[in-house]
Image (tube, rainbow, N blue to C red; front, side):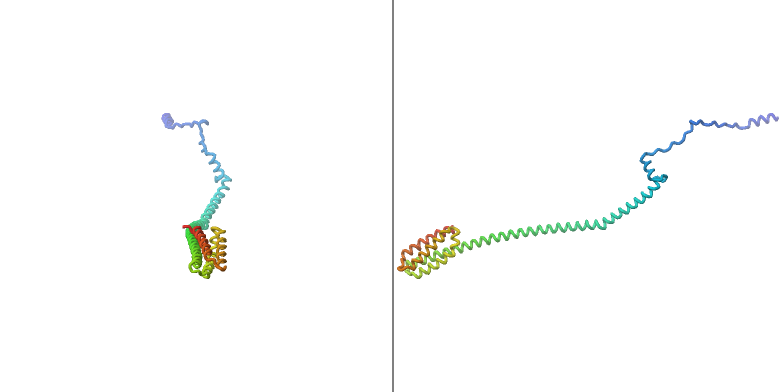
Length: 234
């Protein structure tokens, strides 16, 4: 019975498996993660596990803080100084444009006024020329009437004194008319003055040749008629 028990005991023992060691070739280590060169540089410069990174990280934060303050300062300066200056410049430009438009309008008005003044001056000059011409024509007509009166006094009335008075009036008329005559014929004025002086001298001579003086007055009036056609053509 002891022998049976021993056999049973031996059969009930579990079998122990012996671990077989793995070969060295079968052991594989996990591969490290590969990064780009750019990441490596950034990690070197700003990584917390590098001395350069521990120095650069606070520096970067302060630099960002300074840039933010600087940007805020620029923004505040823009709204405080630049923007009002731009508004003032825009307003000034508008006022300048309005002033230039007003100045242009004023210049146009001045040009129109000058044109009106020039037109008025032209009209005045034309009127003055017409008035001067009419005055000269009237003076020449008066001279001819004085010559005609002197001739009638000699032929019809035989009145030498009346003829002398008419000749004196004719001399005054001719003296006033000389500047106008010189504009057309500078020698004719002297010729008429000499003829009139000769007729007046003949009236002072005794006896008075009334017929001869009347003929001279007629010739004198013919010259005046030619002068009238020259100065006042129809």
